Length: 91
Image 1 (tube, rainbow, N blue to C red):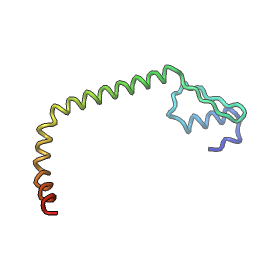
Image 2 (cartoon, rainbow, N blue to C red; image 1 turned 90 degrees about the vertical axis):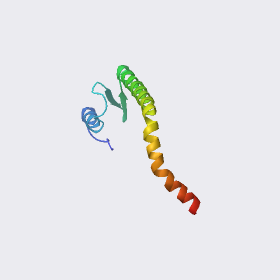
Image 3 (cartoon, one colour; image 1 turned 180 degrees about the vertical axis):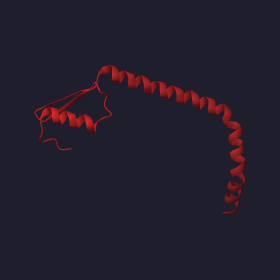
């Protein structure tokens, strides 16, 4: 993206449009052709906590699935096992 022309306000407005995923309270400034984007610490902390929670939930969900897996795994295995054996012995 070329930001060679325009006032600082126009450039910042355009950056906010292009990078609309940034938190609204992010500080965007320009100086000597360099753009600086500062994201508040609390936003970063909230994102990290959300990531930790998601990982924890996925881990708990996978543990719950492990308990349910044997029946479905054995059903799946019984479906593919004969094919696997025929393929292995006929080749």
